[in-house]
Image 1 (cartoon, rainbow over the protein chains, first blue to last red):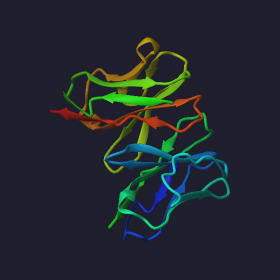
Image 2: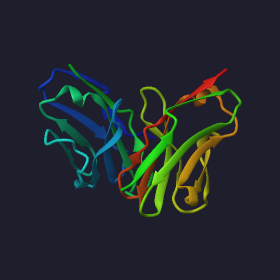
Image 3: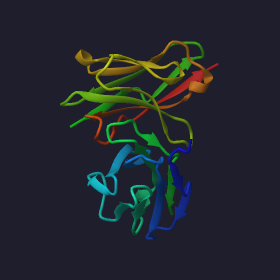
Length: 113
Length: 113
């Protein structure tokens, strides 16, 4: 069956530009998570959605980062005015319910020039 | 607060030898514990999970892990390494299974022919 799909797989952009990263979770999964993976920081939690609401945004590193989820399905992570330290792999995961194991997409590799 | 420590950022074993990847956790409540594997340019794949049932957990690809509360450990083992096991392995913890995962820094496993 289809897994978690993320697009684009790679994104290169200039410092100061805005970027949008997309996540299509597994159909029927109500919980959705965004993580960031970078060399210096390892895997960091960013935000968690249950349905369309985000009960936990504690991991967003600054107000340049935002995310939304519509229709209990697709989620978009937006980074405004990108900085070089935003370069990382952004991973999305979904689970059937919040207490079930998370299934990960292959990530979006973001490079800020 | 929860945390995970993986001892050894890089482990190298010979093909056919025992694999032992160490993970210690810190949690103020009974933890849910997970091991994930990541192949190059891929997302994370769940190997196994502990959710307060049997302390010895069997996962995919011949891996297993034992939960030892007295040692706050959840080490991952495999009796005989295959070349295909070469990857990055992450230990993760959450509490009650409905909070975001907190990951260790990861251990890169190399398998030598």
